[in-house]
Length: 103
Ligand SMILES: [Zn+2]
Image 1: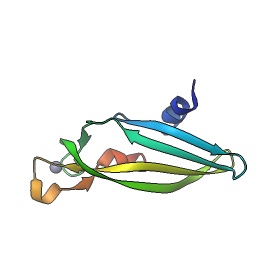
Image 2: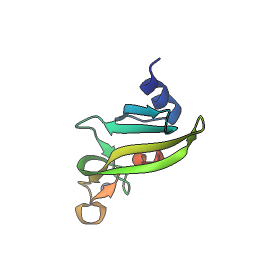
Image 3: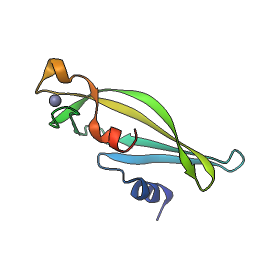
């Protein structure tokens, strides 16, 4: 099993998300995990839960719990969904599943 597959299983990463890359620095005792989503993926509106197209993204990084005593960081381009149900009150929002996995 490769390292990206292992990280995807242990983090419980739902589709359309996947682990894009992992960088390990033994000298800095640091692990950086980069998440991405499949282009053209559909995500749930955080308000009405209807499938939505992705409006735009913003790059974000978070410090996570230590992993094997190494500092760990998560990086992702976080999408905002564009809801077709309630255009004025639901747009644009960070998709709900991305909140659930800590993005
Ligand atoms: Zn909505």
